[in-house]
Image (cartoon, rainbow, N blue to C red; front, side):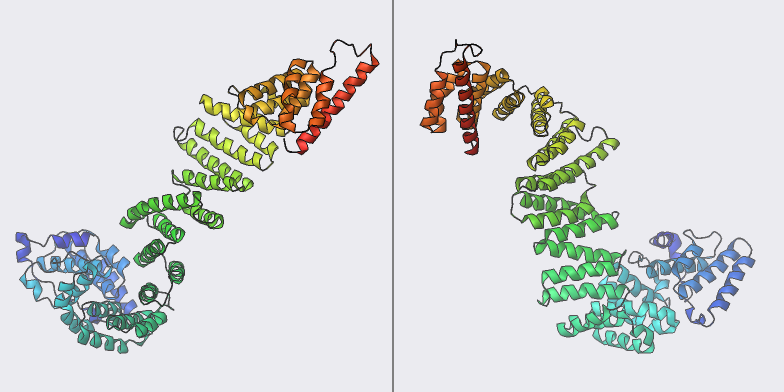
Length: 584
């Protein structure tokens, strides 16, 4: 870049008016056969030169040698970014011309106009060649047209290695501005370089000519030949194949996406790799392949984070992620496609702070459809990801959020009958700070502990706001322990709180608990409405008659009374068993 900056200093200043044109580059003196001898001699000249202008000129000679052989990193390193002090105007002009040459050959180029600081430079013998090459880097069609013919005349005076580096660019430039006679002339020049002609660049450019001339079949064949190679022109041919095939209906979007994915594997790291990713993203979006588009955006963000395209990719990905997960959560795409898409996207987006919210939508959908183990796994992964975020920033994720996700994981496990695992999740989890969420958390913990066989622990859960389900759970736990009085109380609360939800089984168990606890008042009240619940008059008459027996008789004194109690228990248990079998 120092060369570019220095060249810009030639614009408009008084000093620039007196700066002569540099001498022509004498690249022809450097041949492949004499490469080692030339390099060693020039390097020795640098070593032997006195510090100051003499050494600077020796370095210019060696840098020019490297430019002639298109050895850009070596030459750029030798030249440096700052012009040496003490050079006379002619050598200053030469330094600036060589610096510009490196920038142009590297593909960066220099701003349009800076190669012509004054009228003297217009007569520089190498001006048209470098101006045309620079116009290609800058995308300046006007400047290219004005200098292309002169560039074609000057190019053959250079050594073969330099010609091979420039000929494809000039031919492509001629095609771009539709200078067909000049393009034919340049394409014939490839005959002098059979090795270059056998490379993908030639077939690619033939394809460009055919495409520009409206011969898509010939263009397609040429691009296919070029695409067999391994260099950047082969990559460009792959991209052109996709564009041409989609334009003319020779490829489906699926085929285009597959070919672009292969192109990204075949060639990586430069603008043509990035271009393939941009094409994939655009094609994926326009054809409804959201996941393919998102993967392409993810690749851009991962591999080209510093490029301007990354910002646009991030914005597009935000919208597409939101749309994809909304469709998945709403059931507008199949669970199979939703699951496959989520798994593919996770690798690219899981580090984003907002991705866990999308992952939760996926987990919720799994749970909704009964995929309980998979849902639990997803909730756990979200918890682990958020836990990692909290280590870096404790304020990033709230305690309530972590507790809620543990609750969802335990709920998924419980729905799948994995109560012991669910209990362990809740036991190890933080508790919500919010009172309502804490009550919900404790209620679920009570349920999974109960199902895991931990009756006492389930009853000790601190549930302050009792739902109908929790009252029923408490009642049955008391029943299981044989605490008939507590069971009666819980069932009575359930009956009062949710009369429409009070099932046949609830009624039978309340009847039994009340009878066994000696609460015949409650037992009789249940018996009065039991026909409505059971629909079995014969059983209900039996229950009513047994309950109507005098309560004063002592079972220790009266064997008949003991027999009646035994029969009552048998009858009530029969009723309860039948009620449960009926699904009450």
